Length: 253
Image (cartoon, rainbow, N blue to C red; front, side, top):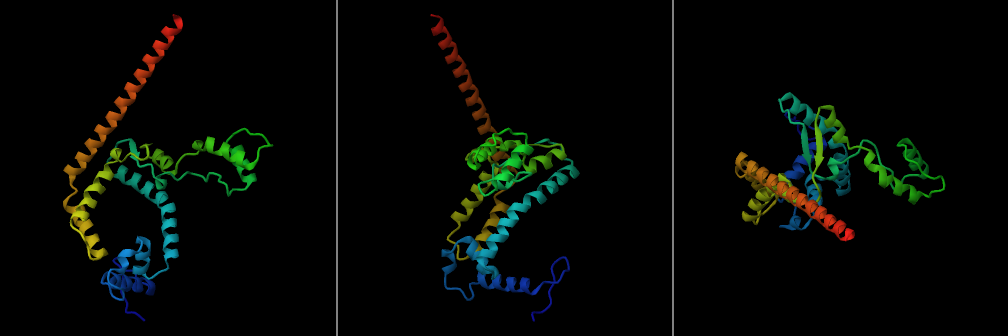
């Protein structure tokens, strides 16, 4: 039996938690591990080894956490903003899967045909009874935008409006600039002998390299990029209108 220890909250540690602490310590100290063998493993496998649990169990926990975290964090964030006097009404979110969990499940290929029919009926989408399952799923894909995202609905309850940035545009994401600064610092200070060294370098980079000046600079750069896209879009529309005018003139001649 391991000696009694408690968490900061005063709650006693379970035996499993104590073993995880010991395993993590031994892992980071490279006890019972061949020299640098852990560097060749995937991150998930390294974490599983450090905690002393099965990699499959770790995968399940991560997936469950990703599915449920949004439901918890969005209301907490809204409440925090409200209590601290933040009055802005518009949010800009990354177009990531964990930001786009819908308030209800959308039928997929694994959904039974009858359930797809019920979903279409519930959303007042007309369809023929002769349609097969693949055709019904096509209708679902055409109308799935009728189902809102969970974080959007939660934000509405607090008077906020959510906007999503387009995918694959890191220049419109200030957080990507933050990560570039931090990861650049880690790369310049390498090579690192173990995960603990990487962790400490990351923490130091966030503390010493990321300040209000850097964040404001990244935000202004993002706004500049967004403005350039808006202007390019407006110019493209003007060119399109001029082309239509020329076409009409040619037709008159």
